Image 1 (tube, rainbow, N blue to C red):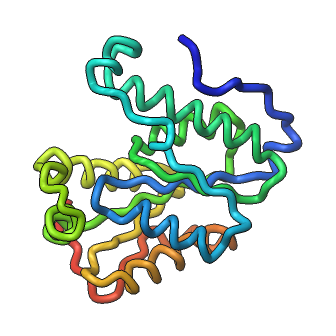
Image 2: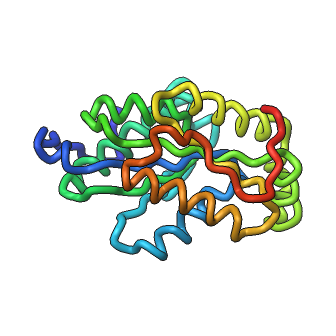
Length: 208
């Protein structure tokens, strides 16, 4: 099947110079807002969003790839490969989107990006409900499936080596931004090995 990117080989010595920091999470966890804010403070770090390629209908995904999951896996791999190729000389690149952490992890392995990382944003269901239904006026997105997806992404990320969870359950922006920024800066400084979760001050975690 054709790719929306033209993928060229990546030189091994250049792969060792760069890292991708993938920010994943369900709708309403704040991943786009928080990553955008972080990028505004660090404009020298390249930033890509998965959804800029467009998201086809479920019918189109099934027709071309067999399932929505297969489409997501293929496009995640293409994105990671493109970023690795285009930014081989950069130390860090941000990539944000809704995708399974295993798909990101597999794409890292395919490109030889052994030190790239995954950060999953998680938010309790009540805070997610308020975010999607009240602040964003998108009640159609707050469904049991979306809540389950949020919890599955967290669990899957926790099962990966060096996967990091950022809890964005605070109803206020600043604590979430602080937790998110702290996590990313610690990763980029290489000091997060023993700190697997960053929680916004004052937030309450629900059981997944």
